[in-house]
Length: 62
Image (cartoon, rainbow, N blue to C red; front, top):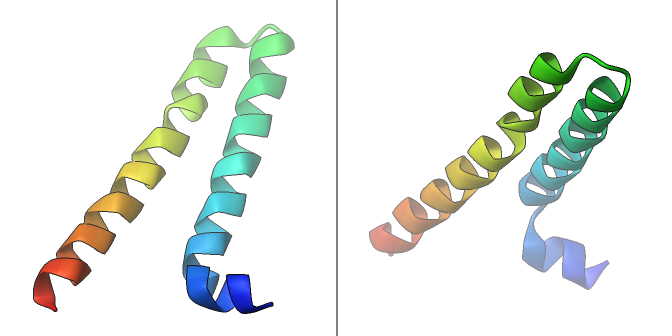
């Protein structure tokens, strides 16, 4: 429980969302809808990049 407090609930939720996006993209890609799978699969790195950017901005304010 201490790890979740240090990591942050919002970060944990965004990582779970990224995992769900990856799973949906894999499903779509393997079912034959390859273009939609690739498109949705690109959302996960975008969200991770936004998370990193927000952390950098918050650390710069301290």
